[in-house]
Image (cartoon, rainbow over all chains, first blue to last red; front, side, top):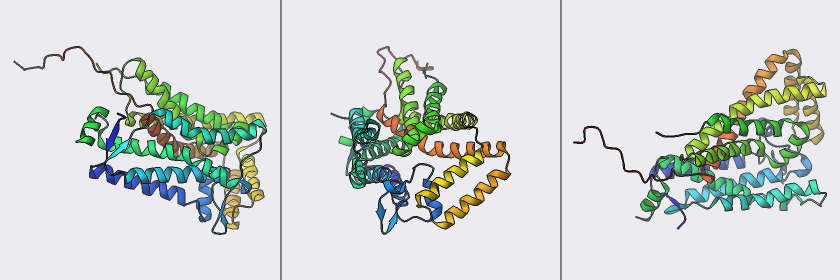
Length: 160
Length: 181
């Protein structure tokens, strides 16, 4: 049985809700942001106009791939926060498998192959963002639960 | 005795790898296509290195340790960024102000930035031209530290969840407790 983390505790629930708010804010801020926010995001994204989605009549503050990563992560943390009983702890294989689509997409220009257009590139980045967000939520939940609790004990509590 | 590997080595490898990948212009330009990947990747790499070392000596590796290694990696990232930046500027023969001006021009060409942002960039460019190189390096270090503290720690936390290891259960009998008789 794969290890899981119980989400019964009020503390875990609150921690995940705060994490959800944080990731959602980080994902949604680039949509029609004030110029200060646009400048802030320039430190983590190239913001090239030809690679950026336009939402509500304005280009986003991050490229379509970054937006996909952020949205994917925000959705994962949101789902983790609303899991009714336990959080599934996937094998690390799934983490790396989820990174593959973005990794392949990022390699295309290096290989001289045609690149994806904006919308496909955005959605191809979702799995990587989702995996990172899910493991981030697991990390937060585990930290809050008690970093000394072993996984076996967590399963016991979760199933009990 | 609780055996724990040194965090310094793992943090240094992760932080410096992020600094080198993010700091060298050609590589950095390519990696910005992957968002903040050098930073998150640096934290993740530090967590992986630490977990491997912990596994080798039979020590546990928890999520909290991963986040802590990521945070330490941020310090190395900031230090490495300052050094790599200095080397790149020396190699290209440009000052920080000139480098900043180039970045400002690129932003202007992209046409993504509103006039207020460009005005701010002009003021910042003027300030950088007037300030000494040391002030700019210290400011850059502070900014890199802040950026690293956020993203490398997140990378380390994710790495902690991905590479988590429980300490192996010892078969040896528990030592007698003091005053148990």
